[in-house]
Amino acid sequence: MNAPIEAAQSRNDGTERRPRIFCDNLLGGRIALITGGSSGIGLGIARLYAELGATVVILGRREERLASAIDQLSGEMPDAELVALAVDVRNHLAIRDSVNGVIQRFGRLDILINNAAGNFHCPTEDLSENAWRTVIDIDLHGTFNCCQAALAGLKASAHGGRIMNITVPQALSGWPGSAHAASAKAGVLSLTRSLAVEWGGYGIRVNNVLPGPIAGTEGLKRLYEDRGTAVHEMKRMALGSFGLVDDIANACAFLASPGGDFVTGCDFMVDGGRWLKRGWV
Ligand code: HXC
Ligand code: NAP
Image (cartoon, rainbow, N blue to C red; front, top):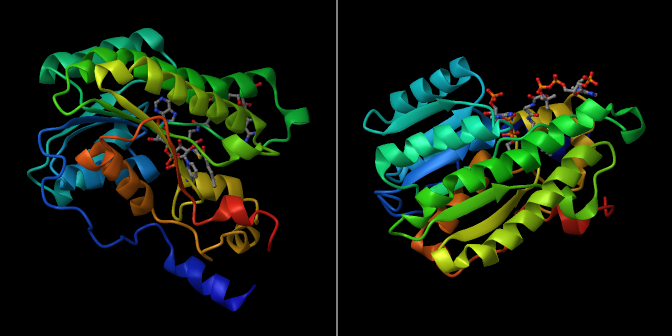
């Protein structure tokens, strides 16, 4: 293994943070709902949002993972306002009712982050119909379900509602071995652009955030590390290292803040230049 790459990987274990760049209470008074907020990138966004003064609702399927995330965050920030919602984004009616409960409780919803997703490596010729459908259902239908359920709350935001959809650069290029996820995320890219126009009149900004490989996450583990391709993938990073959870959280904080007031329908690539380097290893 190339020594500098090995060193970079061992530094990047998922716990490393970026220096705080935002002013105190940047997101004070905002109610933010983060799907898939119990681990990885979603948990990192929840942590930064809570640090910046938002009330944070994290949503996922498993109660125990949500409880553990809430324990972790409230241990770090005893004054943070945190709520857990155990629901599957694929269940249209359950999402409608749960999100409506949040809107009723707080009177609005200021920010929705669609981050929950499913992915695994599987060549398309081996993919069962149910495997294909499962990933499309979580990533694309789940995003639609949450956007539609959140609309009334986002309309009521005094700051101009925000939706950030977490996609992936391979939604643009295609992804051999993960055609299901790339296709679903490409659908999300397009949904974002449609909603940016349809809901712009309500003051709602809708943007895509496209992370490159992020250290210490389940996605990186199952797509690269478990398959022994992490070193090869790191060579494809223009900046020479994988990203940190904070890199995506920072992008989402900017877009949720007044800094994002004039930004809608954009693809915010946060990938260390990987998509441009491609085969240039
Ligand atoms: C082939 C697989 C498979 C695999 C599941 N299936 N895993 N097929 N290879 N590795 C098939 C199953 O056999 C089944 O098909 C169908 O998919 C549904 O599987 P279930 O286990 O019943 O589904 P479910 O319990 O709903 O779980 C969904 C899941 C699971 C997507 C399969 O992995 C999950 O919950 N993932 C959430 C977390 C996650 O994926 N995080 C990573 C996101 S990272 P049959 O035909 O047998 O019924 C990401 C980008 C990463 O998105 C970028 C890295 C750089
Ligand atoms: P992760 O740690 O596996 O987190 C997935 C989260 O989604 C968990 O909280 C999970 O909780 C929840 N979830 C999964 N299926 C759900 C469902 N059907 N309904 C509700 N919640 C569900 O993932 P990650 O690696 O941080 O990735 C997060 C996002 O970033 C994804 O959108 C992914 O595509 C994107 N992304 C990641 C990378 C990366 O390097 N990791 C790169 C590019 C893009 P439960 O299992 O309890 O439901």
